[in-house]
Image (cartoon, rainbow, N blue to C red):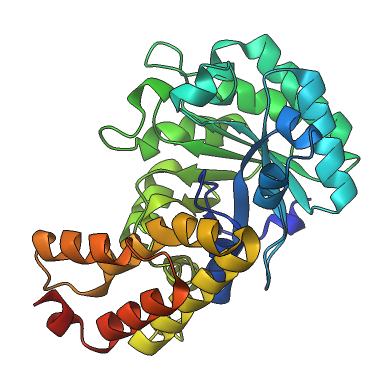
Amino acid sequence: MHDQLAERVWLAPMSGSTDAAFRRQAVRFGAEAVVSEMVAGETLAMARPDVVRRTCRHEGAGRWIVQLAARRPEDMKRGAELVAEAGVDQIDINMGCPSRQVTGGQSGSALMREPDLARAIIDAALEGAGGRPVSLKMRLGWDGDMLNAPDLAQYAERAGLCMVTVHGRTRCQFYKGEADWARVRDTVEAISLPVIVNGDIGSTGDADRALEHSHAHGVMIGRSAMGQPWLLGEVAAHLQGRHDWQAPSLSEKFESLIEQIEDSMSLYGTTLGLRIVRKHISASVDCLANDWTEDERRSIRAAACRFNEPGPLIDFLTRIYQSPRSVAA
């Protein structure tokens, strides 16, 4: 029934981060499934170029999955219709984003406070999807007094969704404390659909523990993949019991970063592309050398983010990757 959901390791949708350029690098290194940035259904209907870019297909392997958010069922339906017409392979409903900008508009995880509206949003997504698979990403609940992820998951299953992802925090926790993987088990036990556990998974050991505590079908990795898109491939190989996975060499990491920079400029134009990719460059710097002090990292991140032209930036990064210690000194 769920053959199309054989993937166990997913790249989480992250606003401003999981654009096509980053998704391409994740699948390059073995990510099994990647999800686009969240897009509001009503803004997608306006056909704004910046919004359309967020949903574009990445190059390389992997299914094309777009995450939609909406406050009104009619906006969700129209957004689902548009991405279905574009040929996406799967649509994901966002009921997990905790940001005030999103929840202030009464979408994202704010929908967990309004179960009737959340159910209407699910129905609208299915109606607009035209038979394409639809999944749901949410949190444990709005707060500690409203842990209703299992109830929403049960409705999602009855309605016909294909998968559910649960981040092991409530909305009111934002990203504070630790993700409660064990609490995700309540949702796993409530439905027969595949459930993906999300939150604080940054290593193969984390993945093992998250699956042990939650009994979930797979893991979704978000912030930990920044600067190291190969992490998803490493975790996937580990969960598959494969011993042939090899960490990319320093030259492969450099090649990946340069390719992402070039893709970002192609996607957004040179000026905006360089600005948007800076967060990925900074994360890559943080992952590069274990013997740098925090002051050294901060200084190199700041220097890398001052470039407004690709040539000088790539020259600077070349020096960093060829001799990290000499640059830090």
